[in-house]
Length: 286
Image (cartoon, rainbow, N blue to C red):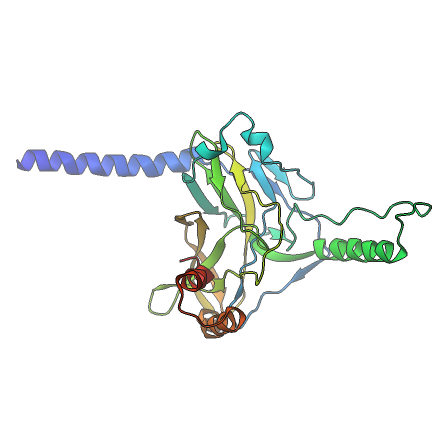
């Protein structure tokens, strides 16, 4: 009996180690080429702020240039694959802390300026629209050149099937926040996921991630006098994923969620119905 127990323990250890080793061997991160910038904004924040995740690329494999526009059409990946058979798990979330000089802007790669105004000799021409168009185009160009110090973040499809990754209905590009170890060594959110007060027609479609491919995003680097361990908490449908842990700095006030919860209650009303409770839990992706 003792021999049998020892054999089982050895097997468990072997398979546990093999799984970790295989994961490291199979996940080869793509080479990233950051976009150009003219200034880097500091993130010395003394309160909890919204996470505002940005997706820069989808279905990235070997390399990716953040300066180049990439088209993404969900239909391209589901024409020959039944949408209702897509997997909704098998994701690995990776923060690459080795790319120390990485920077990124706050604009999604799929953000676009409105269509240009029609020719001036057209009946549809509007001077007001032309002025607004030029204003928005200039603003987007300026914001594209303002960067933050960040770490690359990858959402990897480790399976051999297509995976559907949940995209928020409006606003942010992914459901994720940063968590950090507090002074009592408990994981606590230092960001929250901001929820829109209303929704309009968005043409919403979730992401479809090819096998062994990545979604490319970024993790903000905060400045502060408290050094601790951090991780990403990502939610997709009914699944919660955590990234590898990494070292970071922050201010202790970023743990304080009191004002965030208070503002939520003012925005949506302090009710006790189930829908309201579920919505409130989404502040911290619970």
